[in-house]
Length: 466
Ligand code: PLI
Image (cartoon, rainbow, N blue to C red; front, side, top):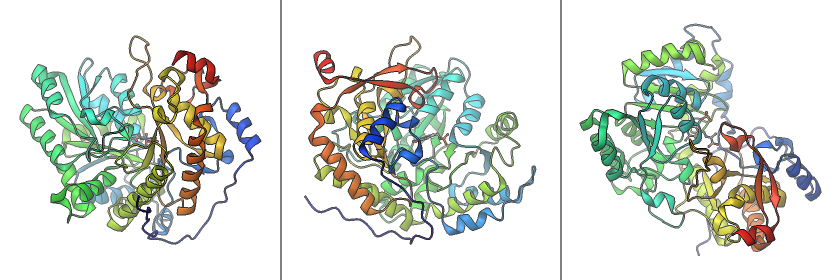
């Protein structure tokens, strides 16, 4: 296997934040206190935090500088105008409604466009997106390609919409479909991208049937760069050009700015559709704040306006994807089962393959995330049966993927950190047969993965079930 190589960081470090590896005994104790849920660990007890890339990014000096220019006016802030112009220039949407983060935009969209009983078709669910669809009375239908559910498939665009599945839904009754929600890339499938060709086909089919298309743009720039790398006709296109082309194919986007745009908080709904704009602007004043700040401070609007322009610079996004690939290749070289091809924001470990002695009832991905923390102080996130939650009848949804996500915050960790993560998880893998599963002992109603508590199930008990 060729030695992984990493593009040097296109930045140097100006400020540091100390981190500390707690002792093995401390880690065991902290994990038990957190109910074996990595969301319930204290940040101070985490050494390398790969829980999420959401709001955990390092802002640039230009973004920190922009904070000082925030216009904190309640209404008609200059900072809003700067953000609006940046979104118009970079994404090409005419209308912008700011929100406190991505789920705020999902809320406004779902309430504006879903009538109770209507379907929203999407390429695999995302937790908050589906929750807001369901709270608005909608029904989510998955229309992703089958390869997305197979961690061993190396297809380049495992995020694509399966056009046959989508067409069947539209043929049955296109009026019942509120809109088609395309996540690009698909977080829950391992950060897998959607091709431009596929997005064009979805857009053409939906326009022909009078059905609207919404892009989940949280990491759309990462998707754009994977299109650049994997779709031959786009190999000479910049990230900026591909992103604009993607946005021209849809009616609206919801955006968690805490990802691509390097900020620690923020989001928006952006659209070409005046009707949606007006409906969402009006709901914004109920749920987020006035439509020119939407739950963000003026300084946050400023940092976001700068981030939106930075994020489409090719050297930034090329380095980001190279860093993810580097960690993936290092883990692969250690023999750790990982989802391939590597996606945009994280490396996903296949927990079923890592812990083959556990059944899905032993919550293998939740358990693996816990044992990774216990082994080396690295915090990861479960993306499996716990995240999938329960259906209307109260039964566990059983996704075929049981993944642990090692997510890279942008511009935060160095190659040495990644080497540490890979070698420690490699060592854990070599003793995986002794690792127990978990069972839920406390389960909240909504988005249970954030707050649920667990207890270990001894290996012998798990083995007799599995
Ligand atoms: O966390 P929010 O509310 O800013 O954004 C919600 C959200 C929407 N879409 C997608 C694809 C996401 O990944 C997403 C949030 N993701 C989180 C928090 C994550 O850790 O992946």
